[in-house]
Image (cartoon, rainbow, N blue to C red; front, side, top):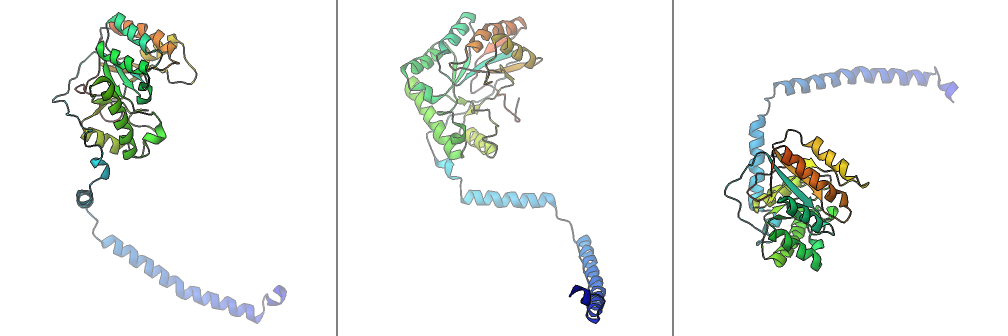
Length: 297
Protein backbone atom coordinates (compact mmCIF):
# COMPACT_ATOMS: atom_id res chain seq x y z
CA UNK A 1 0.00 0.00 0.00
CA UNK A 2 2.83 2.38 0.74
CA UNK A 3 4.40 1.85 -2.70
CA UNK A 4 1.08 2.49 -4.51
CA UNK A 5 0.42 5.64 -2.43
CA UNK A 6 3.85 7.21 -3.13
CA UNK A 7 3.54 9.75 -6.02
CA UNK A 8 -0.05 8.75 -6.61
CA UNK A 9 -2.82 11.26 -7.34
CA UNK A 10 -3.98 10.89 -3.73
CA UNK A 11 -0.46 11.63 -2.47
CA UNK A 12 -0.24 14.91 -4.42
CA UNK A 13 -3.71 15.99 -3.27
CA UNK A 14 -2.67 15.57 0.35
CA UNK A 15 0.64 17.33 -0.25
CA UNK A 16 -0.88 20.38 -1.90
CA UNK A 17 -3.63 20.60 0.72
CA UNK A 18 -1.03 20.63 3.51
CA UNK A 19 0.94 23.35 1.81
CA UNK A 20 -2.17 25.47 1.34
CA UNK A 21 -3.18 25.13 4.97
CA UNK A 22 0.33 26.09 6.09
CA UNK A 23 0.35 29.16 3.88
CA UNK A 24 -2.92 30.35 5.45
CA UNK A 25 -2.28 29.47 9.10
CA UNK A 26 1.34 30.59 9.55
CA UNK A 27 0.74 34.28 8.71
CA UNK A 28 -2.30 34.32 10.99
CA UNK A 29 -0.30 32.82 13.85
CA UNK A 30 2.51 35.31 13.31
CA UNK A 31 0.10 38.22 13.27
CA UNK A 32 -1.51 37.05 16.53
CA UNK A 33 1.90 36.66 18.21
CA UNK A 34 3.05 40.18 17.29
CA UNK A 35 -0.28 41.61 18.45
CA UNK A 36 0.23 39.99 21.88
CA UNK A 37 3.80 41.29 22.13
CA UNK A 38 2.71 44.82 21.22
CA UNK A 39 -0.12 44.73 23.76
CA UNK A 40 2.24 43.55 26.49
CA UNK A 41 4.80 46.22 25.67
CA UNK A 42 2.27 49.04 25.89
CA UNK A 43 0.59 47.75 29.06
CA UNK A 44 1.63 49.75 32.19
CA UNK A 45 3.99 47.83 34.48
CA UNK A 46 2.66 46.97 37.96
CA UNK A 47 3.99 48.89 40.94
CA UNK A 48 5.76 46.24 43.05
CA UNK A 49 5.65 48.35 46.21
CA UNK A 50 1.93 48.96 45.82
CA UNK A 51 1.34 45.28 45.12
CA UNK A 52 3.22 44.25 48.24
CA UNK A 53 1.29 46.72 50.34
CA UNK A 54 -1.98 45.43 48.94
CA UNK A 55 -0.98 41.82 49.57
CA UNK A 56 0.24 42.64 53.10
CA UNK A 57 -2.96 44.50 53.83
CA UNK A 58 -5.05 41.60 52.62
CA UNK A 59 -3.02 39.17 54.71
CA UNK A 60 -3.29 41.31 57.83
CA UNK A 61 -7.01 41.68 57.26
CA UNK A 62 -7.38 37.92 56.89
CA UNK A 63 -5.33 37.23 60.04
CA UNK A 64 -7.27 39.79 62.08
CA UNK A 65 -10.51 38.07 61.11
CA UNK A 66 -9.08 34.58 61.67
CA UNK A 67 -6.43 34.80 64.41
CA UNK A 68 -3.98 31.91 64.48
CA UNK A 69 -5.51 29.24 66.68
CA UNK A 70 -2.34 28.32 68.57
CA UNK A 71 -2.15 31.80 70.06
CA UNK A 72 -5.07 30.84 72.25
CA UNK A 73 -3.32 27.75 73.59
CA UNK A 74 -1.75 27.77 77.04
CA UNK A 75 -2.80 31.24 78.23
CA UNK A 76 -0.58 30.73 81.28
CA UNK A 77 2.51 30.23 79.10
CA UNK A 78 3.69 33.84 79.12
CA UNK A 79 6.54 35.66 80.87
CA UNK A 80 7.34 39.31 81.22
CA UNK A 81 10.25 40.27 78.97
CA UNK A 82 13.28 41.97 80.45
CA UNK A 83 13.07 45.75 80.47
CA UNK A 84 16.51 46.01 78.86
CA UNK A 85 19.07 43.73 77.26
CA UNK A 86 22.65 43.55 78.47
CA UNK A 87 25.73 42.98 76.33
CA UNK A 88 28.80 41.89 78.26
CA UNK A 89 31.96 42.09 76.19
CA UNK A 90 34.79 39.57 76.59
CA UNK A 91 32.43 37.10 78.20
CA UNK A 92 32.15 33.35 77.74
CA UNK A 93 28.91 31.48 78.37
CA UNK A 94 29.32 27.76 78.96
CA UNK A 95 26.10 25.99 77.99
CA UNK A 96 25.15 22.35 78.40
CA UNK A 97 22.29 20.68 76.51
CA UNK A 98 20.29 17.47 77.07
CA UNK A 99 20.77 16.90 80.81
CA UNK A 100 20.55 16.14 83.56
CA UNK A 101 22.58 12.95 83.15
CA UNK A 102 25.02 10.73 85.06
CA UNK A 103 27.85 13.19 84.27
CA UNK A 104 26.02 16.37 85.34
CA UNK A 105 27.40 16.15 88.85
CA UNK A 106 30.95 16.02 87.47
CA UNK A 107 30.28 19.11 85.34
CA UNK A 108 28.96 20.96 88.37
CA UNK A 109 32.02 19.90 90.38
CA UNK A 110 34.36 21.39 87.76
CA UNK A 111 32.39 24.64 87.59
CA UNK A 112 32.41 24.88 91.37
CA UNK A 113 36.16 24.29 91.55
CA UNK A 114 36.80 27.10 89.07
CA UNK A 115 34.05 29.33 90.51
CA UNK A 116 32.35 29.60 87.11
CA UNK A 117 28.61 29.77 86.43
CA UNK A 118 27.09 27.88 83.52
CA UNK A 119 23.75 27.49 81.79
CA UNK A 120 21.95 24.14 81.57
CA UNK A 121 19.25 23.56 78.95
CA UNK A 122 17.47 20.51 80.31
CA UNK A 123 15.17 17.89 78.78
CA UNK A 124 11.93 17.20 80.62
CA UNK A 125 12.06 13.42 80.26
CA UNK A 126 15.32 13.43 82.25
CA UNK A 127 13.51 15.03 85.19
CA UNK A 128 11.33 12.02 85.94
CA UNK A 129 13.86 10.49 88.32
CA UNK A 130 14.69 11.67 91.83
CA UNK A 131 18.32 12.03 90.77
CA UNK A 132 17.41 14.25 87.84
CA UNK A 133 15.18 16.42 90.00
CA UNK A 134 17.85 16.84 92.65
CA UNK A 135 20.39 17.75 90.00
CA UNK A 136 18.43 20.76 88.74
CA UNK A 137 17.86 21.88 92.32
CA UNK A 138 21.62 21.74 92.81
CA UNK A 139 22.13 23.80 89.64
CA UNK A 140 19.98 26.57 91.07
CA UNK A 141 21.50 26.34 94.56
CA UNK A 142 24.96 26.83 93.09
CA UNK A 143 23.90 29.85 91.05
CA UNK A 144 23.69 28.41 87.55
CA UNK A 145 21.04 29.29 84.98
CA UNK A 146 18.36 26.80 84.06
CA UNK A 147 16.77 26.76 80.62
CA UNK A 148 14.41 24.52 78.68
CA UNK A 149 15.47 22.22 75.84
CA UNK A 150 12.12 20.51 75.13
CA UNK A 151 10.34 17.76 77.01
CA UNK A 152 10.98 14.84 74.66
CA UNK A 153 13.82 15.99 72.38
CA UNK A 154 12.08 14.11 69.57
CA UNK A 155 12.65 16.37 66.60
CA UNK A 156 9.98 15.04 64.25
CA UNK A 157 7.37 15.22 66.96
CA UNK A 158 8.06 18.66 68.38
CA UNK A 159 8.60 20.30 64.98
CA UNK A 160 5.50 18.79 63.37
CA UNK A 161 3.65 22.10 63.91
CA UNK A 162 3.59 25.16 66.14
CA UNK A 163 0.87 23.46 68.18
CA UNK A 164 3.08 20.39 68.67
CA UNK A 165 5.96 22.61 69.74
CA UNK A 166 3.80 24.41 72.30
CA UNK A 167 2.51 21.12 73.70
CA UNK A 168 6.05 19.93 74.29
CA UNK A 169 7.27 23.27 75.62
CA UNK A 170 4.38 23.51 78.08
CA UNK A 171 5.23 20.04 79.42
CA UNK A 172 8.88 20.80 80.22
CA UNK A 173 7.92 24.22 81.54
CA UNK A 174 5.49 22.61 83.98
CA UNK A 175 7.99 19.96 85.09
CA UNK A 176 10.59 22.56 86.01
CA UNK A 177 8.01 24.67 87.83
CA UNK A 178 6.75 21.68 89.81
CA UNK A 179 10.25 20.62 90.85
CA UNK A 180 11.85 23.98 91.60
CA UNK A 181 8.91 26.26 92.29
CA UNK A 182 10.44 28.65 89.75
CA UNK A 183 9.77 29.55 86.14
CA UNK A 184 12.49 29.98 83.56
CA UNK A 185 12.20 32.35 80.63
CA UNK A 186 15.09 31.06 78.50
CA UNK A 187 15.30 28.07 76.21
CA UNK A 188 17.22 26.50 73.36
CA UNK A 189 15.60 24.88 70.35
CA UNK A 190 16.74 21.27 69.91
CA UNK A 191 19.10 21.37 66.95
CA UNK A 192 19.26 25.16 67.16
CA UNK A 193 16.67 27.69 66.06
CA UNK A 194 17.11 26.82 62.37
CA UNK A 195 17.52 23.17 61.43
CA UNK A 196 16.34 20.68 58.82
CA UNK A 197 13.40 19.60 60.96
CA UNK A 198 11.87 23.05 61.47
CA UNK A 199 12.91 24.66 58.18
CA UNK A 200 9.31 25.23 57.12
CA UNK A 201 8.12 26.84 60.37
CA UNK A 202 11.10 28.20 62.32
CA UNK A 203 10.09 31.81 61.67
CA UNK A 204 6.62 31.13 63.01
CA UNK A 205 8.03 29.32 66.05
CA UNK A 206 10.42 32.15 66.85
CA UNK A 207 7.70 34.78 66.41
CA UNK A 208 5.29 32.95 68.71
CA UNK A 209 7.84 32.30 71.47
CA UNK A 210 9.06 35.89 71.31
CA UNK A 211 5.46 37.10 71.48
CA UNK A 212 5.06 35.08 74.69
CA UNK A 213 8.14 36.72 76.23
CA UNK A 214 10.61 33.81 76.07
CA UNK A 215 14.21 34.25 74.94
CA UNK A 216 16.05 31.60 72.95
CA UNK A 217 19.80 31.15 72.59
CA UNK A 218 21.82 29.49 69.86
CA UNK A 219 25.63 29.38 69.95
CA UNK A 220 28.64 30.64 68.04
CA UNK A 221 31.15 28.00 69.18
CA UNK A 222 30.62 24.25 69.44
CA UNK A 223 32.88 21.90 71.33
CA UNK A 224 31.97 19.28 68.71
CA UNK A 225 30.86 16.55 71.08
CA UNK A 226 27.71 15.69 69.13
CA UNK A 227 29.60 13.34 66.80
CA UNK A 228 28.54 9.70 66.80
CA UNK A 229 32.20 8.74 67.07
CA UNK A 230 33.36 10.26 70.40
CA UNK A 231 36.36 12.60 70.23
CA UNK A 232 39.04 12.74 72.86
CA UNK A 233 39.18 15.69 75.27
CA UNK A 234 42.22 17.11 73.45
CA UNK A 235 40.28 17.25 70.15
CA UNK A 236 37.26 18.87 71.81
CA UNK A 237 39.49 21.53 73.36
CA UNK A 238 41.13 22.18 69.98
CA UNK A 239 37.66 22.61 68.40
CA UNK A 240 36.84 25.38 70.85
CA UNK A 241 40.13 27.21 70.44
CA UNK A 242 40.04 27.22 66.63
CA UNK A 243 36.38 28.19 66.37
CA UNK A 244 36.31 31.15 68.77
CA UNK A 245 39.22 33.25 67.59
CA UNK A 246 38.43 36.95 67.88
CA UNK A 247 34.89 36.64 69.27
CA UNK A 248 34.08 39.12 72.03
CA UNK A 249 31.01 37.24 73.23
CA UNK A 250 31.26 33.45 73.15
CA UNK A 251 28.39 31.03 73.69
CA UNK A 252 29.82 27.52 73.75
CA UNK A 253 27.62 24.52 72.99
CA UNK A 254 28.39 21.38 74.98
CA UNK A 255 26.31 18.32 75.76
CA UNK A 256 25.40 16.78 79.08
CA UNK A 257 24.71 13.08 78.66
CA UNK A 258 26.08 9.76 79.86
CA UNK A 259 28.42 9.43 76.87
CA UNK A 260 30.09 12.83 77.31
CA UNK A 261 32.86 11.95 79.75
CA UNK A 262 35.42 13.47 77.36
CA UNK A 263 33.53 16.76 77.45
CA UNK A 264 33.90 16.80 81.23
CA UNK A 265 37.64 16.15 80.84
CA UNK A 266 37.99 19.00 78.34
CA UNK A 267 36.10 21.51 80.50
CA UNK A 268 38.98 22.56 82.81
CA UNK A 269 41.28 23.31 79.85
CA UNK A 270 38.51 25.32 78.16
CA UNK A 271 38.02 27.45 81.28
CA UNK A 272 41.77 27.94 81.76
CA UNK A 273 42.22 28.91 78.12
CA UNK A 274 39.64 31.69 78.20
CA UNK A 275 40.83 32.98 81.55
CA UNK A 276 44.35 33.25 80.17
CA UNK A 277 42.90 35.38 77.35
CA UNK A 278 41.25 37.78 79.79
CA UNK A 279 37.67 36.58 79.40
CA UNK A 280 35.07 36.52 82.16
CA UNK A 281 32.38 33.86 82.52
CA UNK A 282 28.66 34.43 82.80
CA UNK A 283 25.37 32.57 82.81
CA UNK A 284 22.60 33.34 80.36
CA UNK A 285 19.57 35.31 81.55
CA UNK A 286 16.47 36.57 79.77
CA UNK A 287 18.15 39.99 79.84
CA UNK A 288 21.24 38.73 77.99
CA UNK A 289 21.40 39.89 74.39
CA UNK A 290 21.18 36.55 72.60
CA UNK A 291 23.46 34.89 70.11
CA UNK A 292 21.13 33.51 67.43
CA UNK A 293 21.40 32.00 63.97
CA UNK A 294 20.79 34.44 61.15
CA UNK A 295 19.12 37.11 63.27
CA UNK A 296 21.32 38.66 65.93
CA UNK A 297 24.84 37.92 67.03
